[in-house]
Length: 282
Image 1 (cartoon, rainbow, N blue to C red):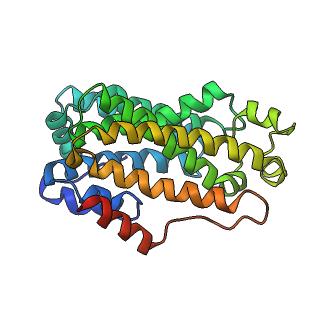
Image 2 (spheres, one colour):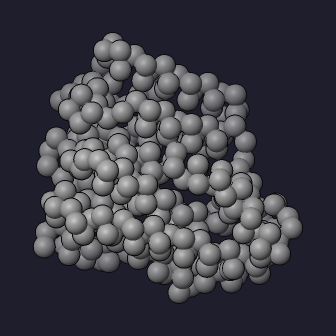
């Protein structure tokens, strides 16, 4: 059975351990205690359902495990809170986290669990980004203290920007796992007629697709920056750090290009520390 948290006095150690490997860990640590705890709960939930979707269990078992999470959320929102979900219930109550956003994340995980995604059309690509990233953002902005409509719009744009960066960064890893998230329309424009993931990853036209998605991500980052620029600094410290880390990855991807062999791209610890110091404390 999936678990999210243990007893309240143990919530932060468990949740923070699950978040420690994330690029977002330092951004979450910048938040005041209650907001930080809520973000750890959100992140922990996402990690659990993502682990289910990416497991090697039979697909029917993965779908069943995600369905159990739906039922567990029903129980939490009905006020029947099991001990392992007290931390999540506290975050939901304090920050008004919406059930439909948790469900959207599960629906995104179901898209991965039901079948290997291969060249979705642009509408499905955007829906996937909304479910696995922007829905997380819609929960997160409530923990940050942002109201509507700016919170909703920040979640929309920053979530999509981050997910596009993930997709571009992980083209080769996803291909090895039989997945291809690059949109079908962009494959057509690049003259790529196959949707076999490894063949697409090796195709010289993948660079054209990469540049098109880089531009799409940049537009989302710019829209997110406009929202954060007009928001109180304390409120957007965490998403600002998240955005800067991923924008640095996007810049490195753009500079590296997509010709093979492709070296992995990630932000080193020093660069991450400098971003945290610049946007977390100044």
